[in-house]
Image (cartoon, rainbow, N blue to C red; front, side, top):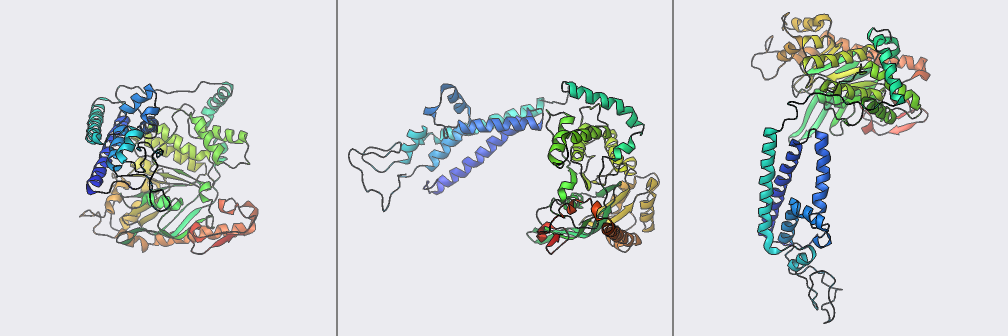
Length: 546
């Protein structure tokens, strides 16, 4: 649209109208969310309602073209008053017919412009006449429409307050399980699961479960830094971080709020699209290719699932879409059944803990060949549910899966289930990376040697976070820069040697057995394919898989 009213009053009115429309629609959607039992339900209703109120606002379909039942939708839509108010405020020019060189200067007595609202014999059409004839909008109704918008805002805000005050979907609602009706195939599969249930609990089929896991190569990163642009220049979120994850190990990533835990996880998972990443990230001694993400799984903190799909359907959907096309449908279905056994989901309960297990299972259904990332899998869970999730992760690691997950202040029982710990302080600096040990004796000894003695009855995880806290006036063990202590420690040098050994060992094995390479990055060895430097983590130059 062009040639609208150009005046200070019209501009201020337009800003006021847009802001009022924002408040009104925001109150409406908040009210819709307050009366919906779930986020998915609110989203579906919101999409349906917004289509109707925009479609029948009187602009896209004019009132004279509507049927009687459609007029009621138009009158009840707050967007109808908004469209009328916006048009009457902006379309008030002296004429809206094109004019200038090449256009006729006048019309004959028996000629008329085809635009609605044009008088006979005139080439000028008043904006007020046009919107009156085309949309039935009156210039004099602007204040009426503004008042209608205010009434809608007050109405939806009041409804929102009442809904928040009196509607509680959690109170008095028993937890129920909804099961899909069994057909012949599902009945046979469920009988097989139940038959293998006791066998799995006793550990008799642990060797069979190890066949599910395909992680075979260590994942390493060296001198990893990550910088982002800020108005003041640039900010370093990760600073010279070293670490590795071996197959069959469970590694925890901890730190205070804002230390860069999720940032490090996203950088390692190649999920960052902005900023500058420097350092070396390798899988089995090789730089990951552009298809690195296909070989990993990433469990986000928020569990978003289709509530109408069963657990088996969700796993199959992920397996069908994300596993290679050369794997048969029967093999994918069999893998899903084994996955259900591994996660102990034969009898699925409808709860938050179960949703988290479904999230993990959906990623495992893709059969990640390299690594499984998890972002705070125990957040929002009670103690027993958190313990079960960590127990499942421990079970996956024992079966051979390489796992790296962030976790926020676990209790001592959960903490001991992890093999290694990567501890970050504010600014993305590494404070500790290494084994935890039985009863956390390894990490206790490291902090004791540096002046911070952890009491025997204290939670080591909470003690470490308190010791490295940045803004506390009294730090445990005195004023110590733990990041500098770590860089000077023999443990840090040992980790650097271990990373070099892991990468060197894999390179040696690749020379001896090139046909057994299993990393995603080597799946394109049939030809030399050049990639730009932006696609290669830890590399500033283009390279080619050859």
